[in-house]
Amino acid sequence: MIFEGEAMINMSSNNDEIEETLNTETLSMEEANVTRAKVKMEEVRKENERLKVTLSQIMEDYSSLKKQFNGITDQSKKATILASMAGSDEESDLVCLSLGRFSGPREEKKKMMSKSKTLENGNKLDGIELGLNSCHPDNSIEVSRNSLVESKEEGSNDVRSSTKHSRIGDDEILQQNNPMKKPRVSVRAQCNTQTMHDGCQWRKYGQKIAKGNPCPRAYYRCTVSPSCPVRKQVQRSIDDMSILITTYEGAHNHPLPPSATAMASATSSAVAMLSCGSITSTSCLTGYNFSTASNFPRTTISSSQSHPTVILDLTAPNHHSNRLSSTLFSNTRSSPTSLNFSSNFPSINNATTMAPPHSQHPLFSGVQKQAGNDPKIAAAIAHDPSFQSALAAAFTSIVAKNNNVNGIRSSGMNFHHLNFAQSSTTTSNASVGCAASFMSRFGQPMNSHQHNLTLAASKSRAMSLADEGEHLSL
DNA sequence: CGGATTTGACCTGCGC
DNA sequence: GCGCAGGTCAAATCCG
Image 1 (cartoon, rainbow, N blue to C red):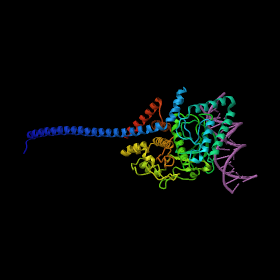
Image 2 (tube, rainbow, N blue to C red):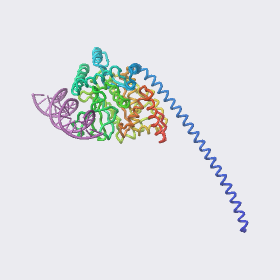
Image 3 (cartoon, rainbow, N blue to C red):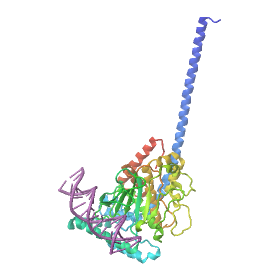
């Protein structure tokens, strides 16, 4: 039997033991927590190291790309320097994008045309100059000034007619050398607003119900410069009313604001690739559908009514979006359809089959490496339309430009196959800003102002991604 | 009031 | 030559 007092003593001693045990356990738990925290810190440190390595790799890729780009744009830079020497800082900040046509003064244009005419049997460009080239400052300023003077002296009606005559003159010149009409670029994007905001100023001048589509087609004219021949048509897709089809035609003959460069460069680059393919034989492009057999029809080159048209499809059907998301940055380097840039672009010159050039591109490999390291990045980008459009514009512009300048004309480049899984629109200011940011970062030399804006945009983008637990140091 | 949009008329190219 | 469809013009209207 155990007495009550004895029991009490036993209990108290037990309590002490329990307390002691508890203290020991608490201590060991704290130690465990500390150890866990240390392990976690170590993991984070390792992660940081890994990210640093990745970042440095990307920076290396970027710098090599930049060197390459700088070399290519040397001539353009000279023009920009000339512009700044002319005393207009604002103008030097702007970039002129030529979409399908040479945009200099008519005399030079004629010279170019006659030159190309004499050389047209020698696989030369048929008077089409495309890409991110800076306008010759004198040319662009002259055009603007002339048009302003005209509008003052002759009145608005005469401006219209002179613009019209100018356009007709251009067309005549083009028609003489190229039986095809002006190349067009159609951009398909999901958009709930009436029109996509692409940074340019447009004025609506007509609306028509086109055959086969109950949705009216709206016609817009670029109003940045009174003499700018660029038009765009906006129409909703008959298949999906949420999809807006914007078709661009013509070349801006004036500097563009930075916010307009992303879309313009994507479209101009697409046309550049079209013109690359059409150098040898324009007609051989007509009617081609370059969609993959395995993928849905997404990007095509066609020539409805003799208009060679590149269709940039920035939408994705729902049933494919997951697949696209997962394959967007798949790390299979051997796969010719990484990034879903499908690789069956027919070789116009019947050049021998080669590895897809984009897979060899430093920028591509850099992004691919990083995305390959962390599938979350791929998912993050796949779910962010602004990133997709920005990357689309950046890749298309940079690689197309490199290709043009390096004279690679039929290597199967097909960055216009931009099959990003995109469920939203590219039209928000954020998207355009993001695209501009990417373009500035990867595609264009920046001034300090642009650099600050870009830095801020990239930073906020990175921060928002960081909040979501993503690691993206683009 | 000036600039942007709307909308019917007109022009142009193309196929039959 | 005719009809159709796409594209443009320009007067009327709207809107900030």
